[in-house]
Image (cartoon, rainbow, N blue to C red):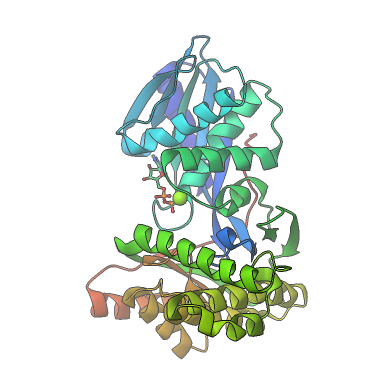
Length: 388
Ligand code: ADP
Ligand code: MG
């Protein structure tokens, strides 16, 4: 599948610019096995890069102007890389502008490039096409101009670029896109950025994403509100237990003991965060010990918490998880990403994938009149140069 994308992108580059690209970069989207709404709470997450990518074809053009073509949108823009970088009305260009801006404010000298990119990462479904875009472009600049930026710093610069665009994301998306490894999930400590790889051995189960195909507008306001509530929660904890720095240092009992000092919502958000951090630790142990059914149970528990205590689900996602609970062939399911739409991530028994896909599609469309999109995903390498 990715071969077709690579051929399409490089052929278009050649037709447009009249020469072969000198570098081809592949930058993946990501999934998160467990650990939701945790990256901004100093906890742990368990993401992995996947086999859905943005392919970039690059060459220097020996001018000060970069020309970037978004093949999927049939759109392009030019930017003078020596001039001040400003936000634009055309959204997708801002991710590239943001990257160029970050490189410049960090003192890197840039020259113009020609670039064509094209993708098979679903956009806006929670697979982090935006991180793949930032990190792939950064990776290309790093390689073309020998900037010697370490992979982890590519992730951090990508995150800053996204902040510049206006989305105050945590580090998980860019980190996974850059640092992913085939058949490994990454446990990231979002406080220290220390990370460990764990075998992504899902034994007799396949990873399938069900895309609800909805995006409720509540998302942004709720995200900001949850961040605010968590800050309130941890402030109350710290005021009572000065030795505690963040939720990961709390037990569930710590939060329960402070229930009277918190609003009902702040209490439920805080308790969810403490439980979810513990679930990530248990999920790693489950993967390390080949206890895949336990991993599935943890995923279901995460969804319950996200739906009832953190309140970031919606009826479409809840239905998909409820359907999963009824099937013995699906041992784990939860909403993935910020919530209010996007995908659920599911562990589905090998050999029964098609039957489950057909059944879920039918029932989902019957319930909501919306088409269910389905993605098979494999855990794959992070951003890299492609060599034939
Ligand atoms: P997600 O990262 O979950 O896919 P976001 O809303 O964070 O969703 O980022 C999606 C945005 O990234 C798009 O609206 C677009 O601006 C940019 N983008 C992603 N993929 C492409 C692409 N193939 N071509 C052009 N822009 C893209
Ligand atoms: Mg994104």
